[in-house]
Structure formats: C-alpha cells, structure tokens
Image 1 (cartoon, rainbow, N blue to C red):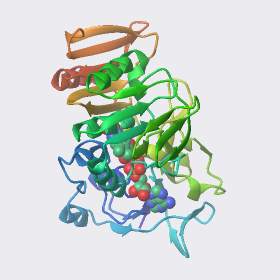
Image 2: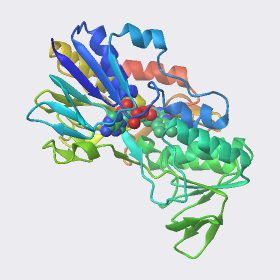
Image 3: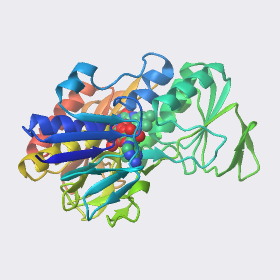
Length: 376
Ligand SMILES: Cc1cc2nc3c(=O)[nH]c(=O)nc-3n(C[C@H](O)[C@H](O)[C@H](O)COP(=O)(O)OP(=O)(O)OC[C@H]3O[C@@H](n4cnc5c(N)ncnc54)[C@H](O)[C@@H]3O)c2cc1C
C-alpha cells in the first residue's frame, strides 16, 4: 500500500492530507509536525488573537482529523532526509515513504535577540501579554506583519513607532504606490513612521539606529521576514535555494513534492523558482500536489492572493502590482476608502486590489480566474 509521508503539520500539510482523501487516495498517510498543537491558522495570530478578539483555534476539530484516517505525529521534528533509501530521519527513528510531501513552512528572521518575533501561537500569546503592559512599542520592518502588529498595538492604546529600512511601508504584492496608502492609514491612526532607518541594536531601552538616534520602547518586535525551514534537508541532495526548488507542479525530485511557505515553485511566466508566503497559495499548492500524487494531473497556474485588515480597513490583493502597471478603478472611488482597482500591463490585467470592497473584489477575481483558466 502506498505510503505518503507529509512533513510539516500546518496549513499546507493538513490540506495535502485532506485533499489526498478527497481525491480518493486510500493508501497510508502520515502527517509529522514539530509543533505540539494540531494544525492552526496563522493569519489570525497578528489580527484577532493579538487584539484579544479571538483565541487561536485548530483548523479542524478532533472528529474531523480522526475521520481522515491519517497517522498524526505531532511534536516530532524531521532531522534529515535519505533520498536513496526513501526515508525521513526523525532523531533516532527512520520513516520510510513512497511519496514525500515537504510542508515545513518558514521561520521568522530574528536578527535582534532582545526583540520578539511573531510566527507561532506561543509568540502571539507572549506578545499580546506584553502589549497589554506596554506604553511604547517599536516594530522593526514595515511590511504586512509589521503594519498588522502596529494596528493591534494602537488598538491596545500603545504609542507605536514603525521602523522602515526603505522609503516607506512595503506591503508585499501590493507594490510601492499602493503601499503609500497603507502608510497614510498608519499615520492617520497615530503610528509614527521612521523611514530610511538602519537598526544597529536593540536593548531594554529600545531600538538604536545607525544615525545615533534611539527609539524608546519597552517592547520591540522584529517583523523582517522569514526564511524557509530547510535546515533538515541540507546535504540530502535536494536542490535548495530560497526554499525547496520545484518545477511548476511542485515536484522537487522523484516521489518528492513541496508545498506552502517552504516551496519555491518555478513560475511558468519567467522560469524562476519563487516562494510565496500566502495562505491561499499554500492551500492551492497542497490541493494541486494531492491531485498529482493521487491522479497524476498537472497543475494550472496559481496567482498569489493575500488579504490583511489594518485599522478596520480590509485590503485584498490578487496577483502582483508592478511599478509600471496602469491602475484602473473598476468599482467604488479611489479618492475615498472603498474601491477595486485593476492593474494592467500591455493590456492584460495582472492584479486586482480591493479596498473595503470584498464582495466586488471577489466577483472581479472570479471573473479574471475563469477567463485565465487558473485555480480559484
Ligand atoms: C502572524 C502571521 C500572519 C499571517 N497573515 C497572513 C494573511 O493575512 N494572509 C495570508 O495570505 N497569509 C498570512 N500569513 C502567512 C500564512 O500563515 C502562511 O502562508 C501559511 O501558514 C503557510 O503554511 P505552511 O503550512 O506552508 O507553513 P507553516 O504554517 O509555517 O507550517 C509549517 C509547519 O511545519 C513545522 N516544521 C518545520 N520544520 C519541521 C521539521 N523539520 N519537522 C517537522 N515539522 C516541521 C512547523 O513547526 C510548522 O508547524 C501569516 C503568517 C503569520 C506568521
């Protein structure tokens, strides 16, 4: 009986297991994960969990997990891969596989030990407690995560300084022009933005900058990106760059696929491997790989998609807004705070941005994906 071993028991790993069953795969599935918890969703950690609105919760209940007929091994970390013998090393143990799916995600960069990062449930609980007791907080890194932490900390009544290395806020695939609107949103809500600032150290007094200034803060958060969790694969013979290098169908080697934040799938548009740290991409890649393992089907293109909520403003982005794209309003009014924009280059819509118009955005996105034959 075919044995699929999935390493990494979070969103991408669990979705792979569920999708294998949905595709009719009736072989053995083992889901191995380093965390002790059953899989939980991370996006809520920097939003509802940090603000105290919700508690973090498992993605699936106990009965649903049991119903999958999967062997769960939580609290176990893979330490190596033996490609020749088709075995994953877990400390002193070896687990044989017929098909391996690598779903080990990413870990937060942590350049300043006196600061805190946000990736896990434990991080979120610790940071929530610290924000509740703090009056001043500094955040290093002005991307999506830094902006979300700023939003939660302002809601808790803290004075917040957001420290950007570049010219301003840079919200992933939203591009710099529209990220400037996010910077406006942060400033309107009382966040102090320090741009072109290089951090040289963090200690109990706050953040020290290269120009000699100190940003006073009792809590400092590093939100400076992630690195793929590939340490256990080094020396295995798999190609590792910024993530596990895969073809456009997520295949890394014979009998091995990678999905989610750890995976660098080759982008059919330019032939380069690229990692995408978005929840929806993790889900679509996991579904595609499950289909490939169960039926051998190839994967249609997957466009990046992410959302965030900052100070109550819901921002949704499909695709990538390039600097030279022409922006066209397709719903609402971009002089106000409710609109949907299409970003075009050479007549082709490459990206959609929704600003407080989730329903209209979703309709436009569904039309676009249908027209392109992509995965929804
Ligand atoms: C705070 C936060 C907010 C976010 N908000 C958004 C958002 O608003 N929108 C959005 O689209 N995306 C968001 N993301 C990104 C999204 O959560 C990720 O894209 C998604 O979690 C990727 O899932 P994954 O399963 O690939 O990786 P992960 O969720 O990182 O899971 C990987 C799992 O593998 C385990 N693991 C690692 N190494 C090993 C090993 N050697 N052996 C066994 N197990 C191992 C890890 O412990 C972990 O449980 C956010 C992420 C964070 C951290």
